[in-house]
Image (cartoon, rainbow, N blue to C red; front, side, top):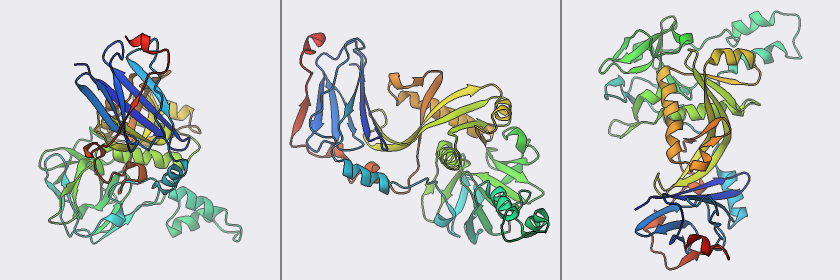
Length: 408
């Protein structure tokens, strides 16, 4: 039997819910489209094949689906949202940028392991306090503020800023038993980490080669970088599994979760939504954060709702040259080779999730990156699996008048 594929996408801020469906045959003859009585679950039926999804928001009435006259394997339609006030409340309640493993969520009992082989990288009880690192441009902002204070004059601002530790040349210094946390990594003192060994640096960006690569002592997997002058280990979160308590479960996340959060932070503090992602070599990705916040459901990813960002992207031959020529209009995100590869795999992998008609835009490829939420926000939360609930009434979407003959 042919596969039926269903995809729904809710754009929060323009209050638009779009439904896409496709069938691996040249027409939708005999296809039924059913809506549950609570207006939250939609099901396509073709013979013995069905596909159901949980809609990102409740819809109004029994929408008329327009079956296309020429492209009979695909259809799309706009669905009318039931309650705009409820949607606005969901928008207002949606959490901002979230990322796993912030300092506030960690305790002294945290244990870090290599995600590849489970070798212990940081023993539980080693770190007595976790602290969030400031944003990457904190030093420049503090330097600017200090140099332009209106109430102090006639002194050397540069020397004063350096003496207070917040000039642009200032560095964060690790202390033993103090763990520092940013969006992508942990920064811990070299004496606190274990099962680590220096490597050749093949897996780190060119601009980081002055720092030695760190690998797992158990399996040799890349974990981060060592800066010998600062006696600090920068461990990439995506390479680790974390156990919050000695008897707790191991937690780990795909690299795209952390990279996506970093991208959102970059565009939040910039007028540009285009980011050059590279690993120091010539090739890289140009990413355009086309929509930073949407909800989608896909019959190929289970029935539940996912919060994500939509990214237009294309490969570029010379990332550093592009940055030099467009320094005021592009943001930069430098990653290790392995993280860049993981990002590419995530973006290209979402081609199976997006409808065929939505996978490209002009010269851009289109992908999705899921957004992390500690607690699912209003539209993404499900008190139970809607597809397992008994439905008392089923409403049928009917063909618009005059279209039935096209599908006989």
